[in-house]
Structure formats: structure tokens, C-alpha cells
Image (cartoon, rainbow, N blue to C red):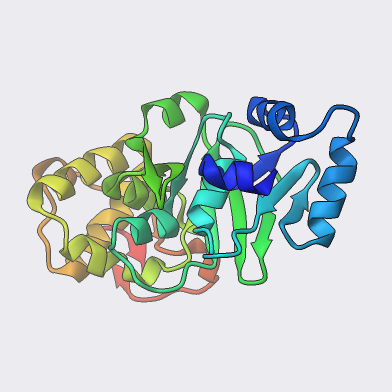
Length: 243
């Protein structure tokens, strides 16, 4: 069964999926329990159980990308990979990504993908997910659904807890074109005023001028750049943001 999954470039066995039923019909002999088969595969080191009915397929030749694993878990669900992992996919950050953030419409528990990687499901309104700038592509042949560059930044601005390497956002924004910054500003302003404030603050750090719609924002409430840090950094009177 693992060879079937690798041949079809699927990183995760989900026993409740249509793909599993297809694989079982093709490779598991009649009368042979799928549970017994999977237990033996775990013992043999060919798959690793990560949750109820979920198993990572272990490739003996090369390691499968955690992004491919994370996206495969939710292959039959509306989702997309965002923030750190998406920005790493786009080549905008090169630090190790220990947390893969996946946006879903319904809450799910975190999942360990291995000793050094965690999958963090986060929730967003289904209509926003459907309208998000995310696309389906492949990574080493595995199907994934990932946020575009600007969408990943907008998510990090609107939900700062979703991004681990948030200190790299000024550097990322410095690499954006004026058109990309304009689209990022539009996306941030459509999400929350706080997201727009954070973007204005970070653009100043990046040495970039805010595009006209963002430049007209006059915030009245104070927000934190990284609420999860629990501390106040430098304060911007223009954007009313504690860095």
C-alpha cells in the first residue's frame, strides 16, 4: 500500500477517504483486514500513525516535504497552507519551518508530523477561504494548496499568532513590488483595521511608502504588532502600533 501511495504521489493515508478505498481495492487482498495491514506497515516502518485513521507514508528514498504532508491531510477539505510555510515555498524565507499553518473552516486538533514539525490548523470563515488568493500546485509531484505571497502576508498581519518568523516581515515586504504591496494593503484593509495598521508600521521598517488607500488610514485604537509576545516594543504614533 505505501508503494501505491508514493506512486500516485499522495503523502498521507486517510482511511476515511475515497483514495484509501481505491488503494485498498487495488492492492489489499480480499478478506485481509485493512487494520491488520496498517498495523504491520507501522511495525515495518513504512507508515507512521499521526491521528485516528491518519498515517504518513514514509518514503525510504527521500523525505517528503512537510507542506505536502500537511496539505494531503486535508485534501478532501477546503483549506490552504499559509504564513511561514507558504512564504518558504515562495522562497521568501529560508529558516527552518517547524510549524505548518493550515487554514480550515472547522477547528481541528494540532498534529505532529514528526519530531521537528507540527501541523497547526487554524480557522477562518468558509467564504474567506474560498475567496483567498490560494492555488493548487505540486511540490515534488505531491498535490498541495498554498497561499499566494500576498495572501500569506495578509494572514500574518490579520492573525499574528499564525506566523512564527514574523520578524522577517519587513524583509519580505522590502522584496515586494509596488503592485504587490498595493494588493497586500487592499487585502489587509479588507480583513481588519489592525491588519492595516500593522502593515503600515512594517512598511516603514522596510523603507517603503504606504500605497494611497493605506496612507489615508487614520487609526484610533492602539494595537500590538505581535500580541503573542506579551511585551511592548517601539511605538508608532502614526500607526498607533506597539512593535
